[in-house]
Amino acid sequence: MTASQDETAKGGREKAPYHFGEKLRAVRERKGYTLKVVAQRAGVSESLVSQIERNRVSPAIDTLLALAEVLDINLEFLFEEYRKKRPVEIIRADQRRSVEEDGVRYEEIVHPNSSDGNHTMESYLITVPLKGQTHRGSYGHIGRETGFVLSGRGELHYEQNVYPIQAGDGISFSAGAPHVLVNVGDEPLKAVWTVAPSQRFSDNLEGKQE
Image (cartoon, rainbow, N blue to C red; front, top):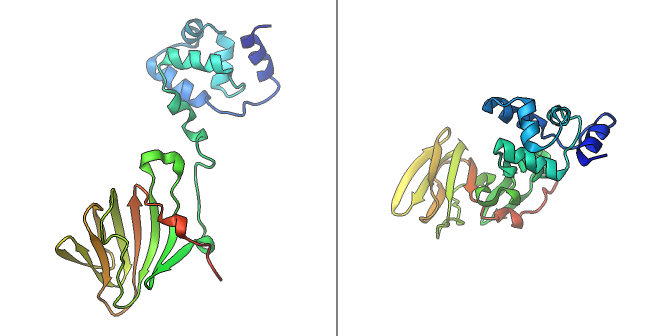
């Protein structure tokens, strides 16, 4: 029995653990190829291609490579969801890690994922106390920052400029220049802040304490 026949035989008994079928079928149909054309060019049976597309069988690596070549598919596209432990990560409200620096509290809401490479990001709920200010960006760093003010009034000190901000305002800027967030209101300043790429600040966070 050939490798292709063996795959076909197994397909009738167990479901494929990895689902490439939807992507392969979508690309094939977009290119206007029939099952027969793809099968002939890849050197496998038309029945096998059909079962792979329906996720009835997992293709052997050589079969998958042959199909990818015929369809001109980047393997990164096929395997992208399997690079991550979980495609969706949720940090529950009672599970946030947090840290406090000079009275400013940072609660993690998005944890950087190393599999994202240069596209990592981290996000926090920041609480700046009365007359307080952040210090982490006072020297600048690579990347970009965005923020959304939830409550309170503040000022973004960016290079030599001062930008007043208040609840409902969104902020975005290059993080390369020195920047500091200052609370100038009469209540704690709260904002959601995102940094990309991640500066790995979250590595210093601790689990939420009751």
